[in-house]
Length: 337
Image 1 (cartoon, rainbow, N blue to C red):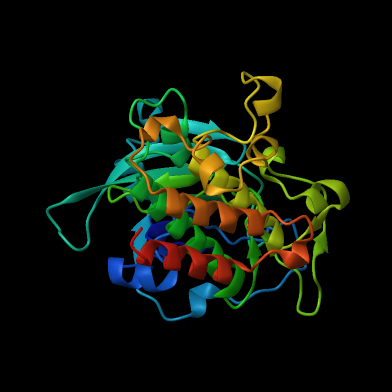
Image 2: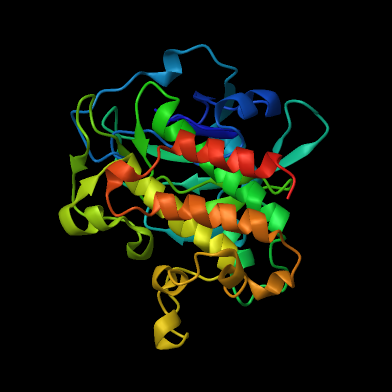
């Protein structure tokens, strides 16, 4: 069972002509659901590492599903040809492909097809394929890297902050069940042609705590430099862990620096320790990404750093919910600087 925004997903079985239902959204519907902030979201028993968890069967709900056959995807990727391979990770290989557009029959759409080589699903002995819209503008991390020749403009950084907050808000608060992303970071935020942020790589996502509970306890998984302290120290996982990661990401947008840079001087290696002494508007100028060359609003940067600081409260109870974070970011963007 899968759930996607402008993505197509289906299971690979013996009969290549079996048709598989896939969830895809039009642009208007996508804005109302994932708010243009999610492009890789798989809800499966194996993804959540639990054989007893129950959640709604999304396939039974009314939707504008698109149907694919395995043969179509083989044709799209030239039978998963090595030349079309984009990369490989712990959860499978990704191939670039081309499929026909449903909206414009004479047009073709570039997609990324993930061929999961993991364990069979609990529902049967078959493998999972996921088809996503191809992200031409790569990840946010690519543009924040010191090696990037085209850093993100300030306005685009704000747009990315807003889109990512929308995606997390949806996962945490807008579904019938709660999802903890668990690996929110700049390299997992992809950008489409319109520079809209799309959350990707849900391989570590977990169902959130049941109603009445504040957290679940699990072994650590994710990226240490983005992880909340309570999760690292105790294994207590909640949506507030994603809020912490989002706070780290905001300082990454402001400074252009990763959470850990071993090539920096000792007092600048860890991003969160480096930004601590710069809370006021005068000193904040010293840490804003120099590649912006002054093309930014110092007032909006100060407001963004305030939001980040709230997300980074050591006590998870003091961190805002993502819907509150989104509201603050929306207000920041709507008010002229």
